[in-house]
Image 1 (cartoon, rainbow, N blue to C red):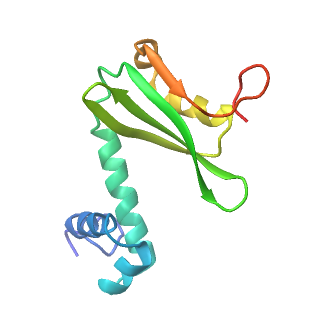
Image 2 (image 1 turned 180 degrees about the horizontal axis):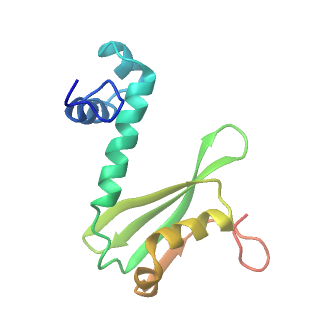
Length: 134
């Protein structure tokens, strides 16, 4: 298939179409509705996120919020970072766990120059004595 992506059996447009549907219903439901595999749906989302991140404008970020969300029973958390500037609210990054190391991955991704431009960092994440996240 000439319009397929590499060795994938789906086209770029079809992958974007599947990823768009995932905003409305679960991955399994998308796979069943379009008679495809869960792996094709997963790849579609991965491709859409990768494209979005490479074309994302990260200039002018002055304020960010950092929070954690529980994603499984027990102590399974994700760290989320989002822009909270006046008139500009966007999710920028999600990392697995709520550890100092996880947050360092975000700042490495953001880059030294853009990190230095930050004026406000807001978080209600619990900390250990000494200030590092739990």
